[in-house]
Image (cartoon, helix red, strand yellow):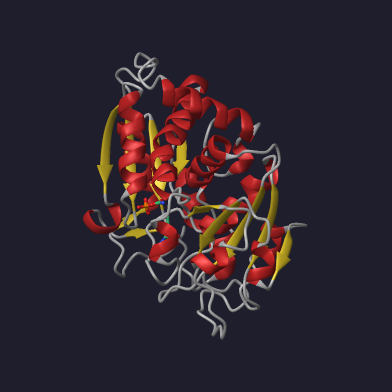
Length: 315
Ligand code: AN0
Ligand code: CP
């Protein structure tokens, strides 16, 4: 594995999930692997889990770890090539990535979707510019269209809690006051398509995800129908892909409630966090014993560690 940018860098998602689970039971076995190596984590956007779990994963592997909020503390970065830099951007991504690559053996990058230019976001313009100019491996810590470290942790969590060989997993859209990226949802879909689960998506009309990600996965616009017999309910808000980056009006109530969960096969509730209580999900659901949100966040450490370990071994 050179870079970890999406599921396409992974040979077998189930094998990687098993590796993460093995690290969970023996986190400090590979401390010599990262000795005298440095991981640099760059955040253009806020984070709690990704920042701490990825840092912890690097430390578990014996690495040093430097974290920088580039979006806040660094120079404003120009991402486009060939422009006259007489505006707000003081530094070009070409120099920034080249410089950071000299201090780092592995770089983690978080760069959210801008949600204004769909073509640019879906071409992963910023992530790809960074990868182009970095000379060391890059780990995606949520980019414009995907969040693979989250999806790997989600897969690990499902594998830990599934009772049957091919559980029914339902990704449901849920409301949110702000326009959020589609990255977590897209990524969950592409990982689950490669896992041994029966995946379906439920979202209101106007909130269909990109066909490039949905492929032949069933999409149901009736949330109650979709919840029937589900073993796992994965909730997430995303802004419209069709009316790109916009919040389009939804008349029905899509908040995940106890009454809706009662339609399922006593399903577990999942969410990547951070979550808005009583908007995305009711307290009664997230506080219930079927909620796996803390377990998912806990598994972020082992997911990140499995990925960084594989990169260290390959480079
Ligand atoms: C971000 C998102 O929806 O992509 C990060 C989730 C891990 N969420 C928010 O901005 C609330
Ligand atoms: N789930 C997740 O990536 O959380 P943070 O945005 O807090 O890192």
